[in-house]
Amino acid sequence: MRYTGGCHCGAVAFEVEGELSEAIECNCSICARKAYLHWIVPPQTFRLLSGEQALATYTFNTGVARHYFCARCGVAPYYVPRSNPDKIDVNVRCLDGIDLAGLRIRRFDGRNWEQAIREGGVLSGSDR
Ligand SMILES: [Zn+2]
Image (cartoon, rainbow, N blue to C red; front, side, top):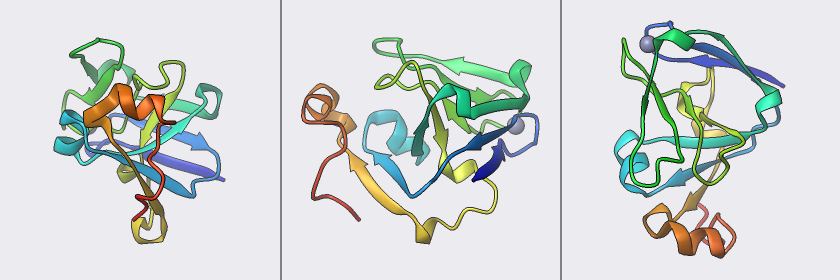
């Protein structure tokens, strides 16, 4: 299945290929504030159609994650995650025509990042 998405003003647009059945909700300091819903995909399934020059990058802490956002409208439609720096993390909220109610949401305890990764990343038994 092919999905399209992007930021609010339209500067940043992308398409991504794959089967989206669940998204990850993280409680870390930045994801909680941004209400990010994560879908981590291999880079070869992701294609940025426009907006590379519109993207600003925010980094903090380890500096591994590259938190892109549109410098014009502020929306963060995708980024490079610390957990998978060789992949693309798509913000499911920025995909066109997504019914969030039909998605399984899994929770990641990003506030305790090191421990959460050691225990396999996505917490079991905390599905919503
Ligand atoms: Zn924008």
